[in-house]
Image (cartoon, rainbow, N blue to C red; front, side, top):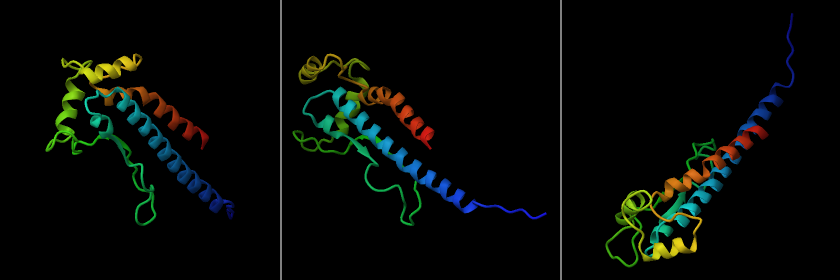
Length: 157
């Protein structure tokens, strides 16, 4: 008894399109959320010269999601502090000399207190906690947003 299959090529194309579309949309959602996390971390970061705020960056947002052969490659988007960034008013110092101490040891995560410029920033933003743990706290703000956006993409497929 012969078996006849029709639509196999069309079905394969549908799955390929879903795969391609999903990856593009997921990447775009991750980049959007990364910029939201970066902006929130900048708002929560302590201020001395403003270098720490400028040093919070996003990596993985430029370029396509394909490798040199045109295949989809692994996509990584990260929010990070540029630890090698030079500090403008302190020759020979990098942002890394300062960033770790502020993130890990400044109030509300540690015993160090806010300086005058950070206190002024806190006064101007009473609904935002300025100080240590700013990257972790920014990520916590966006965890549910990232999950919801990715879930919406998967549901739309």
